[in-house]
Length: 395
Image 1 (cartoon, rainbow, N blue to C red):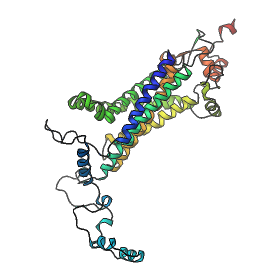
Image 2: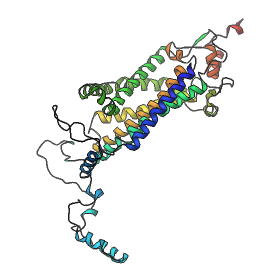
Image 3: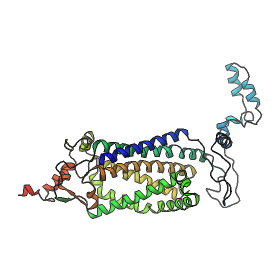
Image 4: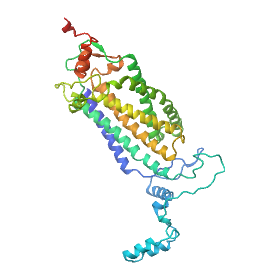
């Protein structure tokens, strides 16, 4: 049954991956306007036909830097351009190039900003008349982060589904012993769920902000989506507090167990022992190499999310337009990578491994589970008297 679920999931997410891949290569490189006016008026008359796209592409072309696009089509060619197009030797063209003047060669001038004075109070927003680089950022945001994020998340889910179909659930080889032992304290479990729930809600609201306009708005309508997007944005901001607190406590409580050691490389080389029920799992202490990777991914990735998120929450406090564009791009990419990491973490902690979920639910794990997956940690507790010997040994 579990393998069948994995196979179905692999097929579904592979199909979604292919759909997103096709859309990525067939998408237009400009943003289609959906509403041209405010107050229930008619939208912009842009159709999804070739003529409509061509008209919009020409309109978008007029907004680009003249240094990128060349002189305006309706402009008369300059004396320099006419002379350069005539048949000349290479030496003559070099001489003409070196003798050009600014009045003849506006195309080759560096980019310049018009400067002046405003009649209103000084403001980072008001004092910038136009910010053309924003179009480049918007084009990037609507390409690689959008399509790449969908491809990455569906690929991770497809791989996990295929692995479950091939491997099945990782069972306890000796079966449940019926003897439990404490693995995580109440404080550890409470903080884990605080951080986990905060991140899941942050991920959901972030995905609504990133993909909602293209996926949800056509389904639920502009009014409902406006309310959903606004609520998601405010909830996304509010969740910064519990998520940050959870990261700090997690770092303090678990840092001592997550420093890399030689055991980690051995664990990685052997794939954690997940390849077969017949092979022994590599030795590990309280946290194995896979759990350490999740820990550092959450701590470092979470720190990046907090810093970039604060940059966006307090615009122009320490970053201008370009800084906030970079922060937003890093925020989106880091968030998507962390979502993929958490997909794997949730998989192993639930359907992927027998006996793992109770560790963070009740705090206790079966004795055989501890011996098989964290043998050195189990032996250490046994030697220090923190765990009673097995019933058979005690008898």
